[in-house]
Picture 1: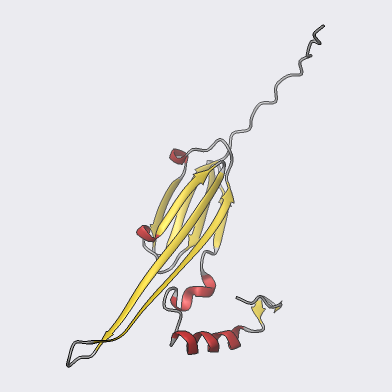
Picture 2: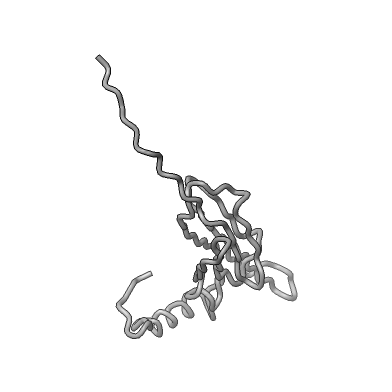
Length: 150
């Protein structure tokens, strides 16, 4: 995708790319539909117990989404595959068969001390809701002297 400057949050090239997308894919992007520009918009809120995160994933099911925690980084991946097949009504022969696939991913640092059990996820109406506690602050050890050998 070509990134162009925007004015007041609107891309100067949106109308042109919409036309290209429609002519290339037909009416809309077959994987993400008309939601493609809005994928994985994320809201993060700090609450008393920790953090709440909402990630927009319209059109995805929980089987399409993979969440992993690795060295303090929470990675959210969503992948979708669409098979489109058209058959001749009379003969039943395949006229056209197309396959589309696409994936999205975002990574967030959530802290080294969190485990998979600390993070809870739920998908409701195309929004992935995640909750996790705040990372506990490590106590700074008191200053100690180090003896020199020899």
